[in-house]
Image (cartoon, rainbow, N blue to C red; front, side, top):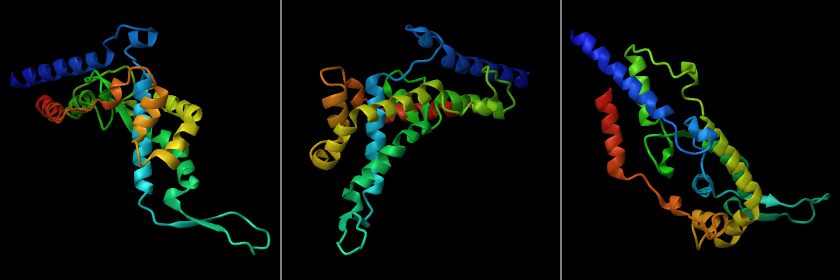
Length: 221
């Protein structure tokens, strides 16, 4: 009897988790299918966050590089610190949008924090149920559960478009303004979203909410 009740509980949890993934939103055709793409604010926020993070990683380098070219090698080449060089910026911009594929959709959240790294509470629950032997059917093969969603792959495209359009703004910040303003403010608030709603830029997942999500997942499993 206890085993039956346990299986019923797992089945209910699976249905609740699946419903969290497919509940339609009010909006366009994609949203009616449960897909809600990042808006301009969210896309810029993630781009700025990842670009700043990548620059912080490479900014610790003390390498010195030589720039310039001469046929006879008589003229001295210009030496510059890598962390202040254009090369560092170009290498960072080339790969930064790939980092977005590390994100997942956390559909249990309603603001821009729904885009975050790490497995969502919903999928943690579903994986836990599968590990317990519960059959969960999402309409896609199990091996594709953790692949980037439509929202994430679309945001990678949005990231690439923003870089292409605002590359000169990013360069200006890098060479002239990074000691004065964080990138998220200079790029997103002052340019991409100028005179538009930029509330999402400063939304953060509250520490209490983060702990609550972890506890909820433990309880469900």
